[in-house]
Length: 282
Image 1 (cartoon, rainbow, N blue to C red):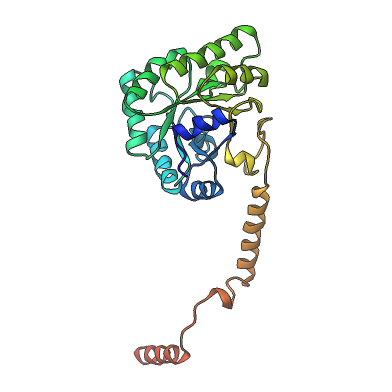
Image 2 (image 1 turned 90 degrees about the horizontal axis):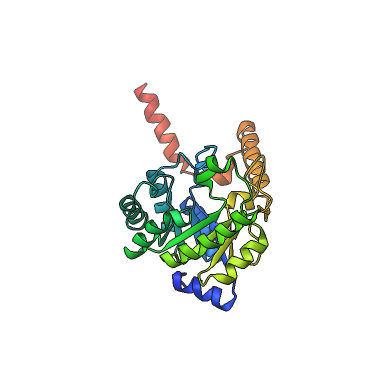
């Protein structure tokens, strides 16, 4: 069954947890979709995990469109959400609506996601008024990494916690259909989840949220170096890939690959005829 804004809302109301994973290409999106994930996020995290940037800030609209198109082709049932990249919506309400429209019309997404609270409510309302579902994003908002001074847990003092709650209510009022809560204390996320009528999707925000999202490279063990505390490794695909790559290199260098079962045959008479004819020409 196709996942939609309505089905995700029904899951919150019934208490059934919502599952979301990132994807940035057709193959991964197809596999996730076949496994039954409710929603796929084409995150601007592709800047780090796919393009090798240090953060999400260099990601462009063209980057997001390219990857969203691929994911949308692979996701038949999952609800596809595309991130609006840095400076694609902050500059003006007009820019926000135009760029959101491109992610839907050209990219094939069913919703867009943008970061921020009160300061982006005007953009959220205008996008929703254009018949485009919007997912909010509060807490650790990666596009504000320079303001935060790094990737740090948010909402650990009263003022910040109260603002996140207020912002969640404001973006809901502006028309958001869901909100991602990233890197905030679990008890704070629980309060927000209870106060909102729209679903909350947590990432490093505890299990009281209505759903969870992870970067698929993190949960499959494909990333190296530091990984966030919340990024549980559900499988070690990285080790399996290294094993496969190494075996390929060894067998190719030794000449054992490709073997007979990996090659195509032709009638020996044809080869002999070719050799004979080429011998005459030479």
